[in-house]
Each structure stands twice: as C-alpha cells, then as structure tokens.
Length: 230
Image 1 (cartoon, one colour):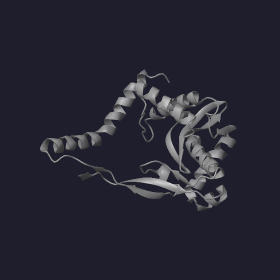
Image 2: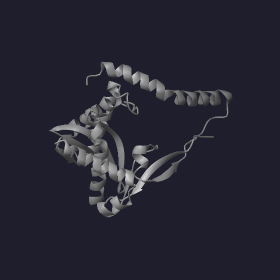
Image 3: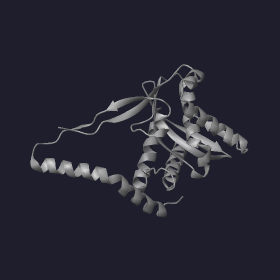
C-alpha cells in the first residue's frame, strides 16, 4: 500500500441569500466581482448571463464549452491551462457525455454572452444539493474583463436562489478558488500495489511519468493547437 500526497477539495457552504454570502467574502474577491460588472459597463458592453445555455440546445452548449476550453489553452502569456480535449475522439466523447448528463438533469451550462456571442462557459454538475464546478473555458479576447469570475459569481447566485447548500470548486488549489474562502477538504489517495519487485517497479515508473506529464502535455497541446480549427 502506498499513499499519494494529500490534495484538497475547496468547498464553500452557501448562505440563504447572496447578500449574506457576499458579506462573508474576502475583500479581494469583492473587488474582483465589482470589476467584472463595472469594466464591462464602462466600456459599453452589455452582458447576458444564462444559467443553462443547454436548455434550448444541449449539444450546441457542450460544443461551445469545449471550444472555449480549447481557446483558453492557447494563451501562453498567462497561467497555462491544459486542453483536456485536444484529441478529437476525447472531444467528441466529452460532448456526448455532457449532452446525456444534461438530459438526465445532472449538468447545466452556465454561459456569458456579450454582443450576441458566448464568451465564457462552465459546466456545472449537481448532486445531493450541491453544485460542482466542472470544466470551463472562455475567449481570451475578453480576459481583461474577468469574464470567468463573472460566470462563477452568477452561478453561485443562481445556486443560492435554487436552494443549493454547497459549491465544490473541484480538487486542487489555486488563487481562483481559494480567494472565495472555501473550506479545504483533504483528499487522500491510496494505491494498493502487489509486493512483487516487478509490480513495485512498475508503480514507481508510473509515479515518475505522472510527475513529468504536465510539461509534456503543455508542449503537445501547443502542437495540436496548430492543427485545430479555432
């Protein structure tokens, strides 16, 4: 038996009203939220948030999400995000699964549109009274307006209005999650490995490959991005 390093899941309990929730937020996220709305208004952009862009066309909403996820991965000047659907077969599989989950009432497509075009989207899973932020994406041309922060803010407000009790920001910690002040729930992964020398050696190789995977994926995604239609 071998234990992986402990990771954490950021989970935020929801208050009964958005105003009560907002009062508990840290100053930096309050300022970020104000910036989202004020900057768009100042520059004359009218935004429209839709709690479930898949209500009319789930397949179209899934395709928009995956495409925006891809566009986000092309940005090299900021914090890198991998394109998890760079392979066409994985992309098709993800769109199909999201469409079926939407039909089962398990996922919504939170979308933000500006000037009639969808500029940011996030898949929001729901189960047992909780909201789970799944994959997301946005058009980098709208980066300075913090459009994804706006989508998250509106999604949380919608979750409160519908009586949900928690928001799960998904495993892993970064500023975009921790600034909301969630509780960090520890996640311990334990691997059961046979005691034979060969099995132990294979496991060590897998650990090394896992540590090397992210930088390799980054280079691969950049190459694949050259051949993908934007």
